[in-house]
Length: 499
Image (tube, rainbow, N blue to C red; front, side, top):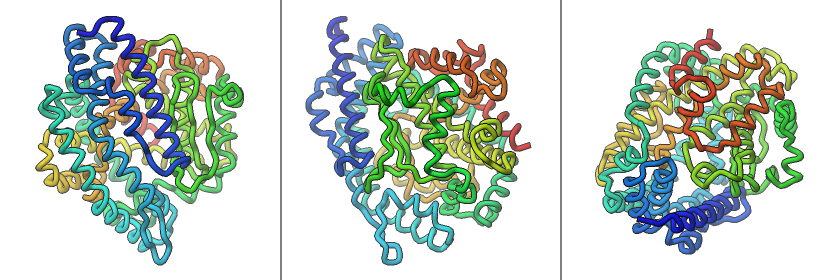
C-alpha cells in the first residue's frame, strides 16, 4: 500500500505528466509540429504508468474506496494502457497528418476530407470523397487500431479485468443504467426523429431520410445556407461579447495569460476547434481555425465552455478534482455555451438573424440526431468491449445495424474501430446533454430567458466552475437543482422546440 507521502509525490508527478501530454497534443493538432511525440514523455514518467503503479493504486482503492483513490487508480490504469499503445497512437496521428486522397487531380489531406465533404454541394463528388476517406481508413488506420486492441486485451488481464467493460465498471461507471436510458430515449423519440430528420434532410440536402446517404449527413450538419449569418470574422467577437455579458472578460484572461487564444491559420492545424488545458488553471489553450458557418460557431462555443471551466477551476483543489473526475461535468459546461448558438433569445441579441424560429427548429432536430447517434454508440461500445480482440472484425455488421437503426442512414462499416471513444467517453457526452438540459432549465427559471446576459448567472457559473470536477454530474446537478441526471430531459427539450 502506498503511504500518504508516496501518494502526494504520485499526484505531483501525474500533474506534470498530464500537462506535458496536453501540451504535446496541442502542438501537434494546432499545426506547430507534424509528429505527435509521446514516447519520451511516457519514458520520463514511466513510474506513474507502470503495471506496478496501476496494481498498487488498485489495491489502495480497494482498501479506501474514496473519490480520490478511485480517480488515481483510473489514471494509473489508463496511463498504463496508453503507454502500451502510444506507438500506435503516434503512427495513427502521423498517418492522419500525412495521408492524402486524389479527388479529380486535387490532393486533399485526410483530415480535410470531412470538411471537403461538408462543403461540397455536388452529391457525386461528396460520395467520391467519402469513398476515398473509407479506403484510407481501412487500408492504413484500421490495421493499427486492431494491433492496439490486441495489446490492450493482453494488458487487461494483468489489471485483474477480463474486459475493458469490467475495468470501467470497477471505476464506478453505471453503464448498464445509462444504456437502459438510451434504449428508452431511442424508443420514445423514434417517430419524432423520423419526421424531423426527413424534413431536415429534405430542406438542407434535397433528399428524403429514406434516400439519404452517410455523405449527405456531413453536408446537412454543415448547413451552408446559414453561412451568411455565421461569418468567420464575427465568431471570436461574438464569443467575447457573450462572455462579457456574464461578467467574464476574455480579453483580460488573454492579457493575464490565463487563457491563450490560438486563431492563426496553419496547414496541418485541426479544422475543428479544441481546448487544451495545459495548466488547470493557468494555461488553457483555446484553438480555432475560423472557417465560419453554424457548425464552426457551435464548435468554438463548445470549446470555450471547456476553456472557461478549466480557467476558473480553483488552484486549491487536489489533482483529482482539477484534472481528473467526471468529464460529463466539463462536457456539460461546454454544451451550455454551445447551445446558445441555437437559442432564439441569444440569436436575437447577438446577430442580425432572420427566420430564427426555423433555425432553432433545425437546431433541435440536429441535437436529436446526435443524441440518438450517441445512444446507439454506447450500445455498440458495450458489445464491442465484451468481444475478444480476435473476433472484433465480426462487429462491422453490428456497427452498421445499431447505428443504422437509430439514424435510418447506414454508416460506413470502415468506422467500426475509429468510432470508438476511449474509456467509454461516449457516456460522458450522453450524461452531459442531460446535465446541460436540466441546468439550462434551472438558469432560465432563476434568471429568465436571457439568463446568458445576467451577471448573476455568470456569478453562479463561476462559482460552479471553480469546483472543477470535485463532484460528478449527478451530484453537482442535484446540489444545484435537486434533480437527478436524466436523459429524458433532453427529449423534453427537443420536443418543446420541434413543436
